[in-house]
Image (cartoon, rainbow over all chains, first blue to last red; front, side, top):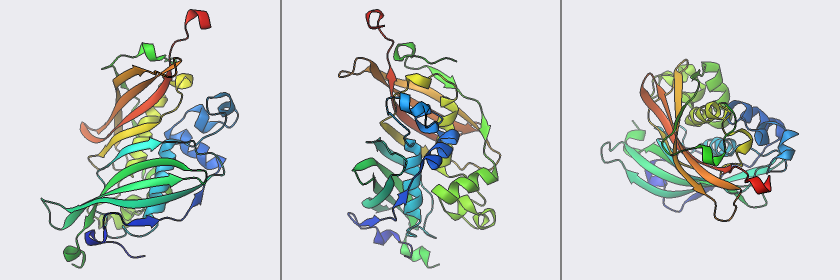
Length: 151
Length: 152
């Protein structure tokens, strides 16, 4: 898939990403660096926590969704940066062996007032594991408008 | 520091965390997996981007900040997980070798109505490099309350 210019971000347009499976080693390796809590870093100790076993860091779930979204290619060459994310909600635990599917939907798209070469897009991301939705969040990205993309 | 219960926090309290740096290799390894874009994965290609060189994924910056807070040990076994994060903002690029300094400010504390053993604590994280804010975010965490005498 080639990248999308601003005018291709039509509100309500959706794109599905390639599902990805997560295992215990992935979960623990990520968490040791970025979220070192026993329910994310230690298979045995996690059994004695409120989660009754290892679960993925919420930061990890969001990062996986981000990676799969980027691999769709719709931002390749068009991304001018991302100023932030909002309303991240972790709704259910992600466990070793879960296969995560990420759905992206365009929520808002507008031209920048200060820079006509760029647009600002808000995307709603929903991550599911087969049993249901595990996380939702919104991400804001800046993309090229078509006129300058050809330059 | 040892683990604190909900009652041991106050709104406005600020915790300083240990400064940390990310190397070029750290940034590339993370981004190849979780944020595969030229400015995060390819030092040469990154020079031709808007950023003029390699920068860290924003996801890596916030994870690094959160980990430094967890390493203080004040949540430890009293954390019952986090249902939410809000207002993630990436305000300036983070480059290899930058010294990331993160503070964590308690912005809200409330008791759970449905679960008397716990409450909710919200924390505003702020990360700076040489005094310039590079990222911020707010976390919401379920935290144990101090067990009462008769339930002990």
